[in-house]
Length: 498
Picture 1 (cartoon, rainbow, N blue to C red):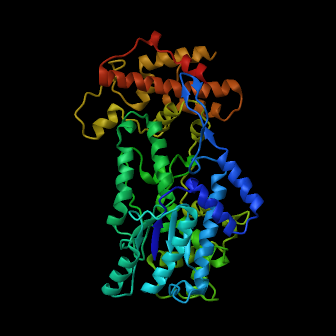
Picture 2: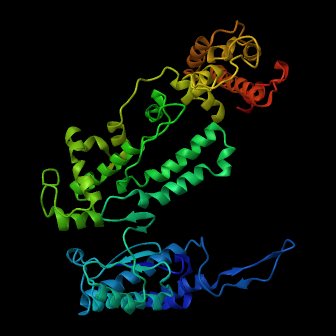
Picture 3: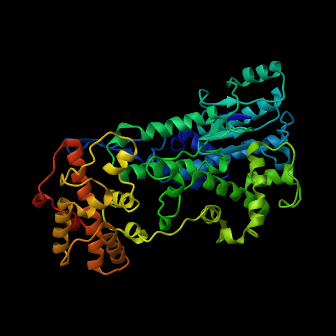
C-alpha cells in the first residue's frame, strides 16, 4: 500500500495541464474552451492608498475559495481513477490479495490518497506509473516528504527493492489517514498520546485561564466534540471524576441536572452504527469489502465471529447483542439513517429529573451567570463551609456581613448585604414582599421560569443575575478584600442588556 500526499491543494490545478486532461476525459472542445476562458479571465488588483492598481492577470492556478475549483478537482480525481482502473489490463499489475474481489486499487479524500497492489516490484511500479501519468496530465505531484509505502508479507530484500524503485520512504503501522490512526491492533496509550497532549494543551493554554466557568464549559464541549468523532474508531477513553460535581451526574441529560456527554457511552453508540450498516449492507465501500471477505452471504446477526478480524472489527461484532436486547434496530433509525443520539439515550442511564431544570435550561440570562446558579442550586459553590469540610484552614465568617458563618443559605439571601441587593431588585420588578430563605426563593424563580410571560421571564433573569452579582462581591472580598457599597451594586444594567 502506498500513502500519497499531493503536493498542491485541489484549488491549484495547473491550467495548461487542465486543458489536456479535460480533452482526454472526452469533454467537447467547446466546453473545454468555456472552462479555460473562465480561468484566463481572472485578474487581481492591489489597493495602494485606497486606489486599485491596474489589473494583474493570473498566470498560474486557481486561488483558494474559487467556486469553480471543487468541480475541477473532482474532474481531476476522475481522471486519476480512470488511470488506476486501467491497471486491470496491465499484465505487470496484480491486485492486493484483499482487494481483488472488489477491483480496488485506491481510496482518496481531497489530497490524501491510498493506493493498493500486491507487494512485488512489477505491480508497485505499474501502480506508481499510473499515478505518474495523472501527475503529468494535471500538474499535481506527490509530496515525497509526506508519502510512504507500507509493505507486509515480504522479505527485507524485496521490501528494500520496492522502496528504492519508487523512491518513496517506507512507513510503519499505525499511521494517520484523515487524522485517524489506522492499525490492525488495539490502540495503545502511546498511539493516543498525541491526541491527549493536544487536548490538554488546548485546555491549559493561556487563553482558557481567563475564561469564565461558562466559557470553560464551552471550551470543553468543543474539544470533546472533536473527540467524539473518533467514536467510530473504537477508542477506549478513561473516565476521570471532577472535584465539583461527579462526572456521572455531569453526563446526565439537562433535565436531570447534567450538561455533558458520556464519551464511553457515545463511543459504544457510534460502534453500533457500524453494526447497523453491516447488517443492512449499506452502499459503502468498507461494508462491501467486509461482506466480500468475512460475511460472505451469511446472516450478520447470527453468524459466528470470523477469524482474522482486526481489533476494531471484533469490537463491532461483539456489540451485536445490544440490538438483540433492544428488539431490533428500527427505533434507532430515522429517515433511513441511524441516529447515534437515539442509541446514546438508550444506553445511557437516566437520573431523576430536577425541579430547577427550566430555571437553567430556559434561562435568558448570561451563560456565566446561569452556570453559577447551576452550581448553587446543587450546593456546589465553594463557600467557606465547604472549604472547611475539605480540611482548609480558613476563617468561616461571611466577608460581606462579618456576622455569621458563610454557607449557601446564608449567602443567598440571609446575609444583610445580599438581602439588601435582592430587596432592591424585587422593588425594581414591582414585587413588594420580604426576602425569603434560599430554597423558597429558588422555588419562586423556578415557577416563574415555567411561564412565557415577559414579566415572569424578567424575574427569572433577575434572580440569576442577582445570585451571580452577589457571588462576584463575595469573591472580591475574599481575594481583594474589597466590597462595593450596596447602593453602587447595579443588577438592573444586566436586566437591560437582556
